[in-house]
Structure formats: structure tokens, C-alpha cells
Length: 322
Ligand code: TXA
Ligand code: MG
Image (tube, rainbow, N blue to C red; front, side, top):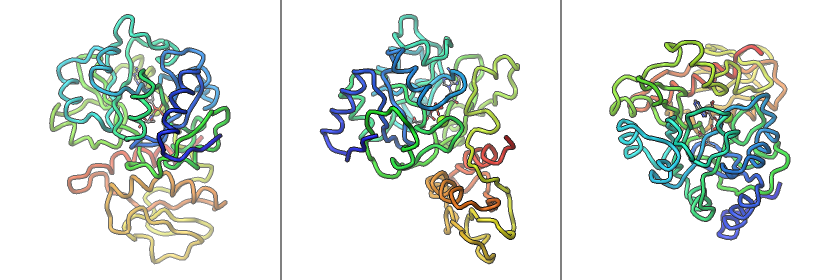
């Protein structure tokens, strides 16, 4: 995989590769994405192969603006208000697909809805503008592994034409996914946009657990219990560090314990900083061959921040038995 510095030549090369049906690794403000032309079935098939996804799960479509989104999905009034408030940014809307949207049905896993967002990262936006079409991009990791927040973490992927180095991702957590396909608005995935900010516009969000089982199945894979998986076991809500354990700390809670390595997500106790560090720190701790990673308790909601919900969601999945 060729890693290019963030220059105009890299943007042109990425757009050219996309037009040729190749895969490119692109920085976004959430995590790095593995991008392909959303209208090209073969390119989409290559995404599933490169990620080793065990089955076809729908991908998020990335577009330049609201008008480009509305060419693909039908956005109800509430979705439009969310788009106006939070796009470009880390919010993904799931909405009914327009007939003749022109998107690969493999990218949508055959569903009649699509997940779409307008990303804020200037490099991603530049590639979208130069390419001139929708880019399907899941996180640029092998299936079931941690999402990459640096370009180096994307090296595990084969068959990628090139990557653009955008430095570490601003948020470090995937976008928040909200579904507006049915009578209720549902939070499908907690993410980089805190729930409270969405609820200030929509009122309380429903959760898919409240839906019938048949509904829930299609909303897969970020929702599979064990999705963000390091090799090392995790011990959550740890108030101590035991022999042979490494420590993922927050706000210095585990500072008093001897350990081979303790990384503090945010010594100051800031949940936004903690989210940005989460996947990179988990990767580092996972590579140490520790018996287990002790994870300090992290509040579910911080003052005015609310990213604790998404951080704890990722940690629960990373800790789930598999
Ligand atoms: O921040 C992000 O969202 C990153 C960056 C690269 O944009 N992308 C990302 O994509 O996290 P991915 O493929 O790892 O996660 C896509 C999630 C999956 O959980 C999938 O099930 C859900 O979106 N999804 C996609 N289309 C859907 C649909 N029509 N209905 C329900 N869920 C859908
Ligand atoms: Mg992912």
C-alpha cells in the first residue's frame, strides 16, 4: 500500500484510482475509511474481500453535500433538520433509498434503505469533489478488528491502491448512526456525535432493541456483540491492576498500580480526548502480549459531552467473549 502525503497530487491520484474501480484508504474526521466507487459492484466486492467481512453488511455512503445525499435517499423533514444541524460531520442517517439511486446493491446489502453521511474532513471532502460521485467506505480495518485512527493502522489491508495520510483522526470514534426509515427515529450506533446533541432536535431517540427481531437483524455488524476486538482480553470497570495486566486508564484512576504499561485516555478526565485516543491506545496495549487489559471505569455521560456512551459501547464490544 502506497501512503501519500496530504497534497493535491494525492487527491487527484485517489480520485483516479476510484474511477478505475480500485480501493483507497482515506482519512475522515471519525476514523480512516476504505473507500470505493459506490456505483461499482466490482469495487464494492473488493471492499468486502479486503476487509474479510464474513457476509455482506451494508456500507456507509459518503457524499459532498445535502443535495448529493437527496439524490440517493429520501430524507423526511426530521432528517433534513439533522442534516442542516450536523452536516458536514460525524452523523450517519439511514433513510429510504430512492429508486434509480444508482448505488451498487452490494454496497447496500440488498436493502431498500441506505446509510449516508457528509464528512467534514477537508481531505475526504477534496477527494469527494475531485471524484464527483458517492464513495462507499467502511472503516479501514480487517473485519472485527479495531477501527484505524492513523494511516499506519490501515497497513493490515491488502489490495489497496493507495492511502492518503491525514494524521490522527479528530474524533477517533465512528459516526453516530440514526435510522429514519420507520415511524420512530432510532439510535443504531452511538458515535462521535453525542446523543444529547441529536435529541435536542429530535426528542428522545428509540433503541433498536425495542424493535422486532426481524428489524434488528438487518442493522448488523457494528451491532454484533464482539465487533471491536483486540486479541487480548479486557477487564472492564477495573479498580485495580493485577499481575500480568496492562492498564487502559482514565483520569488517573489506576495510576497507583504497578503495571508494564498504563496508558491514560485522558489524564484530565475529558471524554472527547478519551474518544480520540481509544482505538490507538487499545492497539498499543493489545500488541504487548499482556495477560489482560484492565480498563478503568469511564462515566457514561460527562458534563456537556456525552461521548462516554459511545466509548463504553466500544469497550463492551471489545470485551465481549468470542
Ligand atoms: O465514521 C464512520 O461511520 C466510518 C467512516 C469511515 O465514515 N465508517 C464506518 O463504516 O464506520 P462501517 O462500515 O464500519 O459501519 C457501517 C455501519 C454498519 O454497522 C452497518 O450495519 C450500518 O452502518 N448500516 C449501513 N447501512 C445500513 C442500513 N441501510 N440500515 C442499517 N444499518 C446500516
Ligand atoms: Mg467498522
